[in-house]
Length: 411
Length: 112
Image (tube, rainbow over all chains, first blue to last red; front, side, top):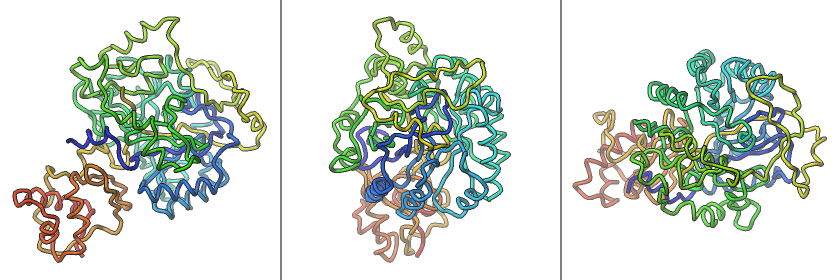
C-alpha cells in the first residue's frame, strides 16, 4: 500500500494539528476563516491549555500550528509557547505581527523550535489593507524588520491567494528575498467570513492557471500547506500531499477546545468532540464517530469517472460545503470547470450552510474605505444562548489573523 | 500541510526504500550507528513518522521493519548487525542499506 493510502485510513496522531488559542483579534480581516474578533469566555484556561500540550507530547505530535484570532493577544501566550517547547511540542505560530516588537523579536531569536508566520495578503499596503484592514501592512513590515534585526532564523510570510494578489506573486517573492524569509501561499476558502467575500476574491479560472504555472516553476522555494492540490488536475502533481487530510492527518482544536476535522471546517457537521471531554483529545482523534467516518474509503461520487480524479481527489471538502455543493462532487474551483457549472446550477432551494460559530465584532474596529472589496462584516445573527456578548466590551485588544494551513479536503 | 518538510512535505520526500541515497559511498554499514538524539520516531501503521527537531524536517520510514532497524541501531555494533536482528530478507538488504544511507545523509541516524 502506498503511503498516501495509509494516510487515508488515518494515523495514530495527527501530522498537522492547528490549534487556535483565541478568537480575540485586533484585526477584522474580511476573509477570516474563523470569524474571529471577540474573545470567547469559554476559552481554555492556561492550565487546560497546558494539559492539552501534555497530551500532545504523549501522542508525539511533534509540532503544532498555533493561530487564532491573534494568538499573541492571549496574556499567557508566551508562557504557553515556552511550556510547549519545553515539552517537545514545537510551535509554529501565525500572527499579524502586532506584538512582535524589538524585545519580543530578540526573545524569539533566542528560542529553539519556534517558527513564525507573518500574515500578509498583499505585496503592497493598498491590496493588503483592503483585506486585512488599515495599518496591517505596516504592522507586518515592522514585525519582519524586527525579526530580521534580531537575527531570527527564517520566519515565513503567509499569503492567502486572492483575485487581487495573484499578479503579485513575484513581488511577494521579492519581499521574501529582501527580509530573508520563506514565502508560503495558501488557498482562499469560503470558510468563516471568507464565505462573505469568496465570490469577489477567489481567483478566476485564468488566475488559477497562472498560479499553477507559477507553482510549477517556483515550487521548490515556496510552501503551500499542500493547499492547492486541486490544481494538480492541470497536469503535473504539485509537491506535497495531494489528498484532503481532514480528520485523517489534519485537525483543528479551537479556542474553546472543540475539535474539528480541519481549520476550514468550523461547523457542527465537522465537530468531532472536545478536549475537555473524558478521554481528551486522544480519544476524539482516535475514536470519534466523525473521524472514523472520514477515514473510510471514499467513492469519489460524481467525480469518479473523471480522468483527473486521482490527482485532485475531488478537491477541498470545506470549499464544497460552504458553497453549498455536494461533498462527493467537484470542488467549486475544479480546473475542468465542473465546479463552476455546479455553482451555476444552484438555485433558491440550495441551502448554503453557515457556521454557527461567529466571534466577529458587530462593527469593525477600523472602518475601511470603499473599494473593490465591499465590506461584508455585518454581523450574522448572534446566538442568544452564547455568552459572547459579555466580552464585547472586553479590553482584550490586539492582533488577528487567519491561521494556517492544513491540507484541503476531499469528498 | 506538512510545511515543515520544505518545499513539499511530500511523503515521497521521505527516505523511502526506493529512494536513491545521495552519498552512499560515505555511508559505512560496518560501523556503529544510532538514531540522532534530535530525532523522534512515532510508530504508525505504515512504519513510522520521523521528526528532526533540529532541521524540523518530517520524513517517513515506510515499513515497520525499517523502524525496527533504525531503533535497533544503538544496540548493535554495526548497521549490518541491526539489519540482521530485524530479520530483513537477504534480497531486501541492498534496498535497506540504500534507505539507511539516505537517513544518514539527512541526519536521522548518525555514527556513534
